[in-house]
Image 1 (spheres, rainbow, N blue to C red):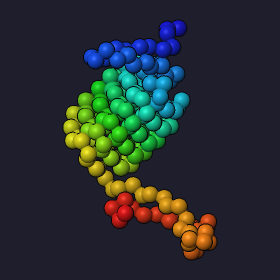
Image 2: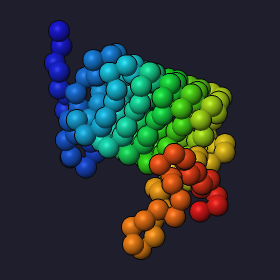
Image 3: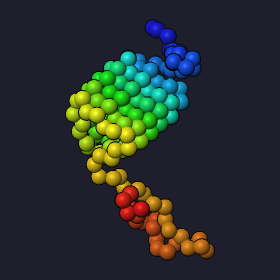
Image 4: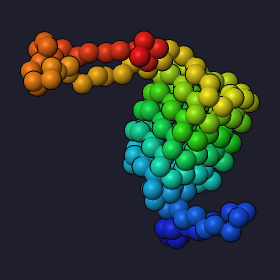
Length: 158
């Protein structure tokens, strides 16, 4: 069995440390959270502060940048770059050799073809719904019994 930890020196002399993911042996920063059910190909990288949910697949040569979030069952092809702080909803498929810009948002179920170039800050698909906390008066009493109902607000109405 090979080494568990790897170190990579980048251009400015900084040394980044990675651990091999148990499912696929890809390189995962110790500061990233990648679920055990996710496959990370041996030549793929997941950077610090990234979060990857259950049952995802990250193809060889792909790079999940810092702070990116992948929902459940996301499939990333080969040689894909997912930019910093990008949020990808569940059941998204991204074709090989694509580039997803930083600070982008991709709604669940979206399919992106191979060789796609998505600019920074792009929003694809419907905006996600946000769950709000129960509304309370200043005295702390509920305006309504929100323990039995869910309040949702779409992000474009916020």
